[in-house]
Image (tube, rainbow, N blue to C red; front, top):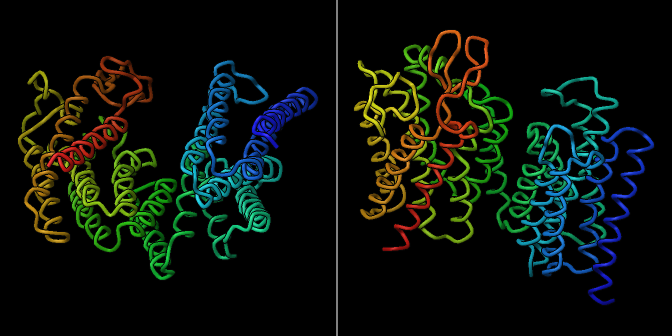
Length: 476
């Protein structure tokens, strides 16, 4: 069969799926049913990839066209495919397919990991949606039900069993149960980002399962993740979704970075946990009024503060390059240093100065700096650098890179906070705040970009500090 005919088969399948879903939408007057048909069939389309041209450039080309099609259907708000709430789920789905197709190029192992992730997403997520909406009675988390979560588990396990026997993929029963469990729990907690979260978690975990040579280390990594999940829930540091994300982050981090990496993270992050607990009574009033991110952290805040560090350590686990260990230390030094600067800085007797205008601003306002807060952040950066020396190696240059890069990230965080981070004013009490609602009323945007909140600023500056660290390491 020629390549042209293979393309004809793929796109004919796509047209048939869209045609069937359109007819179902018209006859049932239920767009949710048609969307589930598209969702399931799009994921099962990987089987055609596997049969026709596995691990080649062609799935990449076709996935690119799917991304373009998803952008068009989203913009046009085609009802039998897209939800009316403006969700970007279809774009996330097709983008995930494209990324995994790229990673699977010229590697049948990674291509099979792509298949596991995308088929579990399409079938497991759809099963949760269908069963949960029709038969769900016991709410487990937000609007997700116990019945939907169980359906997701069994459907994910079933589709993996089919793939294992159809394509001789080497997954045992324990691995299938682990992946199905992760799929069900991720679907439960990931909300609008399930198409990204499920594929990321299943693809990464599949990689560990296929490539690990030490069952004890894999099991220990899982236990570390479970322990950290329980720790976060017990101390009420994170909400449930963020606690699950922490479980996965710690699992990945311990697997790729080992005990040294885990100890380093705990020693640095323990500082902020202790300080927040000690100072909470003194800082509660300020942060509750000013900052919507104070208190129990959610999954977006955890991602903003930890995702870059986890990515750095994953790359280190693959490449074994010291560049990414330094980047990891830089990332956690920047995020903890920035948080400590805020927590300690508000205890200053006088109001802080805006980093750009040098005018006095209220305590807690992003962009404000104080002597006390600045010294605290410097101490954290020095502490992180010293930990690197003590735990990894005595290297003065690496120490300087960690300290300088993290401090640059913290400074840039303050600059963005001053210039373009969203700030609002309350109509009732007149206070400047980062909340979109204050005194139970909508606030007015008075400065900055509405979409650039503190979480996005934190993520941006954390990434910048890591990039600077990597460049300094490469330039040496």
